[in-house]
Image 1 (cartoon, rainbow, N blue to C red):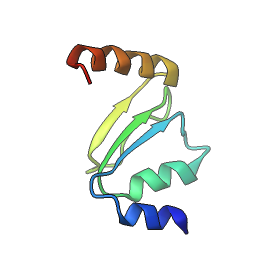
Image 2: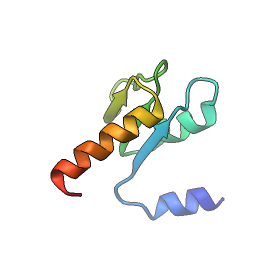
Image 3: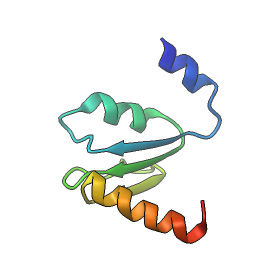
Image 4: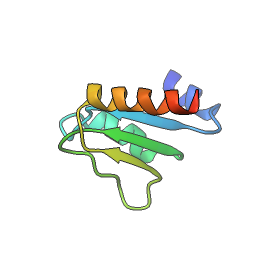
Length: 77
């Protein structure tokens, strides 16, 4: 599987989930079972599994992306 081959070569993974609620378990499972950080953006199902490194944002995707853009401009990324 191409995804597994790609993941095998990644040393520092950050998974960004935008709007992947409990109705789309495939996407949530991929991020949840990988080592590394997760950024979960979802207005209703934003919680992270215990012990998982990451950030959860209880808001819609567009709103979160706009706020991330503002913060990135502050640090000139």
